[in-house]
Image 1 (cartoon, rainbow, N blue to C red):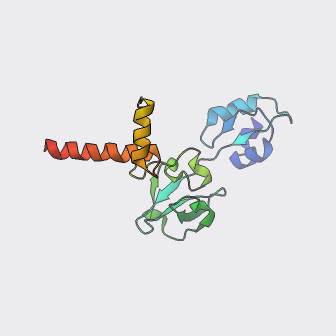
Image 2: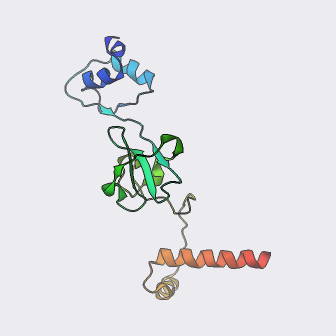
Image 3: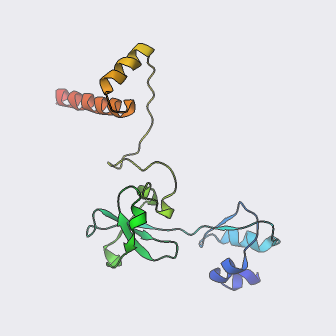
Length: 169
């Protein structure tokens, strides 16, 4: 119980070694109680996960605003590897709108997680699988030209859907 009485920041400093699969967040009291009941050993390292936030603002429409590893607000371009060109954010906090951290995937921001960047239109993406014979695939690849087959197919299917919508009106 003495670890809990000393406060969160001191707990992070004191608890350096426990089971490797335990993740501690600032709001997870049950995990802290479980840590109190465990014997501390120097064989296993603890992983501390702080919740970082991502924001957007109308003042900087082409930039993300988010927290760095120390909690300071920084802005960076909404483009691939944009995190490498981050600068301190000096705007008002009241202008910020919180958004899901996954939107910043692909920018190298540490809080975005891993995986492909989300689609630019914000819609959830799902895989579509099409069975094709070798002859069909060869014809599609020839029609696609320099484009990747998936990109060509997506464009063709979207164009067909637009044509169908126009006919149904």
